[in-house]
Image (cartoon, rainbow, N blue to C red; front, side, top):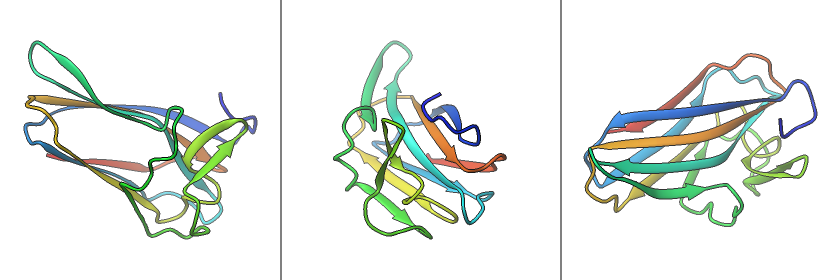
Length: 140
C-alpha cells in the first residue's frame, strides 16, 4: 500500500485483447466518483505481441512524470493546473487536486509495430472513496 489512509484503494488492471492497428486509444472514465473523491494513475505499460514475440511499446508514470502533454484530461471538477500529485512519497498522474468527478483521461498511442494483441497494465489509486464503478476503454 502506497498511501497511509485506510480509505485509499489501489487496484491493478490487466487488459489483454486482440488488436491490429498501429494506433490505440486508451481512455479512463469513472461513473461512481463522488464530489470529494479522486483517482490517479501509476505504472501504466503497453505491450504489443504476436504469437511469438512480446515488445514493450510504452511505459508511463513509473519514475518520470514529466511527459503528461500527450494525455487529454477533460471534465475535470478539480483544480485545473498540475496533473501530477504525491500520495505519501509516491508520484501519481492525477490525484486529489487533479482528477475527480467526471474527469476523463485519454491518450492515443501511435506508431505501434505490427502485432496481433495488446496488453495494458496499470495501477489506479482511488482517494477518499470506498466503492468504485470504473470503465476503461481501449478502441480497437
